[in-house]
Image (cartoon, rainbow, N blue to C red; front, side, top):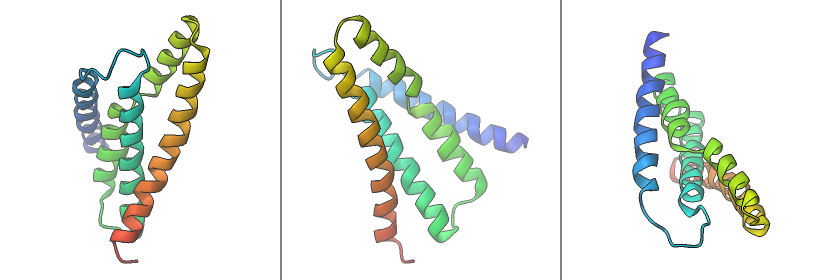
Length: 126
């Protein structure tokens, strides 16, 4: 149990630092939270791919799954930030941007998980 906590914490630390560093990259002046969207989609692809590798091959230990899925992806992806940014857009009167952000986030993250799983299915033999 203690080692599991260590793996989750280590992954979370790395994921959170990566999210912070990527968040420092400016992506235009539109006010649309592009980097958060990109981070969430990237995390969705990673969690989809790792889940598929583990299920298809059994080559990933439970400790590594905890590290990547719960720790790294949990620290990297940003649902709470997504929620705050959506509310902020609404409070600023940007209903169209908020609606687009919700739609893009949900659709692209679902597609990201699917793409990650599909990629691994096609790269690794059954």
